[in-house]
Length: 128
Length: 318
Image (cartoon, rainbow over the protein chains, first blue to last red):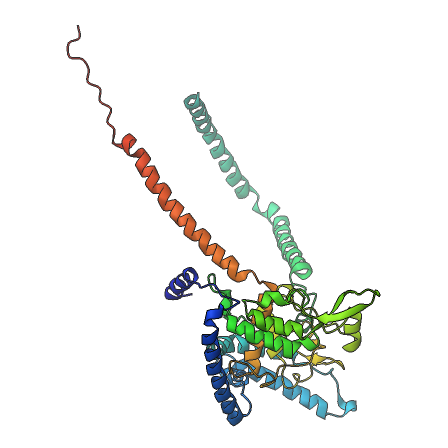
């Protein structure tokens, strides 16, 4: 936590406004106008969404970027190697198999651990 | 007394010195006299002792050296990533817009299986919804009324004081509807799981498109690295655009997960905002009291600190 953030937190916590659950009747008109504005905004947003169709999550993209980053690339490499071994095992006929089928869960864990640490701050910067 | 003791000891020490010197002289004499006689046995003993030392420490590390894990990493589950939650700061509140969005996600997605049995409609008022909105939502649900004149229990519309209704009548019904797996109640889930918010966010967003190569996934379960044992009965539920937010926020998987986790944290800890505000009040009041007490102390002590006691002896003493 930086000093400026700390100070702004203190300021905010001293100047916090009570949230009124029930709007006083005099303000209702303003509220309705605000609501109308909101509705307009919503309509605009809906139109935008219709254009975009479905919002796309940035998390998978960030994960991919992180997996190819310098820090996590070795883990990705290990996981890929493991996946190859498993694929090899699957391809060999049953009589020739000497070992048990390997599980790549541990390799996957190491990869996801590294990826998660890398993704977290980037994702939070993007989310609302 | 003390000084006498010291002297006595010193004298003793000085007396003992010549005796030591004689012992040393004797030892050197002995080694010179018979080196051949004592050496082989002693060397063998030294070797044996060294071997025994190595063996015993080796045996110790064989016994207790390697740490034993009761669970494999897969059984333990992947530890969740730490996320920089906005409400996690010392003085930060919940993001109440996120709470509103999170409640929408709960209501439209989670509520079909998970109950929120400890949260009444009234607690949403002033937190994420206005009175009218909360009332409208409560009225959409039906609750058992008081028995009528014939003793029958009729249904009535919900009130603000009612609790958010559960999707199933009881745990057995919930299990029966979910292939034996009980969807846990979400009111205190953030406090009830290791990792809290981080765990639930990781769990919701952590479903891989396909399980890692070679990972055993039992039938009826789904792979999720963050769930202990990696086989979880709940399938992935959050997909991009499954909810349409009122405020126009793009409802991506990660956004929905973040909002719903923040909402669940509020559900588990609704007093947090008030608690932090109270903490600030305590700090403010104690600083004022501290300053006051220092000033008062100065004021009270001023006459004592500034006084001067003077003794002027009478000049003519005879």
